[in-house]
Structure formats: C-alpha cells, structure tokens
Amino acid sequence: MTEEDQKQRLSQLEARIATVKKANEPTERVDRGFSHGELAWRMVIEMTAGIGIGFGIGYGLDYLFGTIPIFLVLFTLLGLAAGIKTMMRSAKEVQDKALAAEQDTGAEKNERD
Image (cartoon, rainbow, N blue to C red):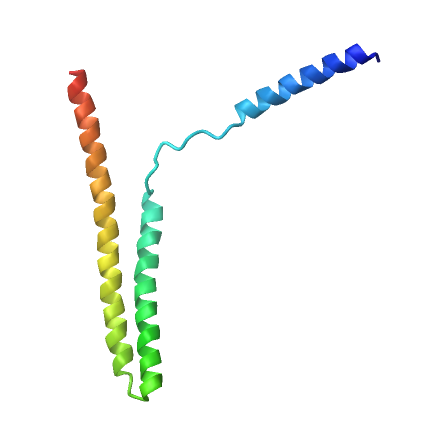
C-alpha cells in the first residue's frame, strides 16, 4: 500500500465519520415546557417537601421544648398549606404558558387569514 492510497482511504474514512456524526446529531426538542408526567412529579415533590419540612421543624421544636406534639401538628399543617400553595403556583405557571402559546398560535392563524 502506498502513501497516496493511505491518504485517500483516510480521507474517505473521515468523510464517512462526518456523515455518521451529522446523521446522529440530537434533534431539538419540540416541547420545551414540562410534560404532564414531569409536572405531576414536580407537584408531588413540592407537596412532600412542604410536609416534610413542616414535620421536621415541628418535631425539632417539640424535642427542644419538651412539649407534647403540638408544634409537630401545627408545623405539619403549615407545611401542608405551603405545599398546596406551591403546587397551585406551579399549576398557574403552566396554565399561563399554555394560554400564551394558544394566543401565539391564534395570532399566527389570524395573520395568515
């Protein structure tokens, strides 16, 4: 095999590699927002985190003061309320994005007509 043959084979190999890399490039995601499953998990995590943090604070205060579990119950309920409030904020955010997207598509449709 001559040096010219090796250079030619190398250039052909590089061309094939470039073609394969171009074909395997990741495509851009069409839905840039949350899917329904991701949104559901986000809400579950927000609710659980709120309750868990409230439970931890309440238990810590009860342990610190040596009281009956009054702080535990109180802060668990406050954590539940905070979790619900955060979930509602997430749902409103998604709803606002959906309305904005709907208005954008409606405006594009009106421009075409």
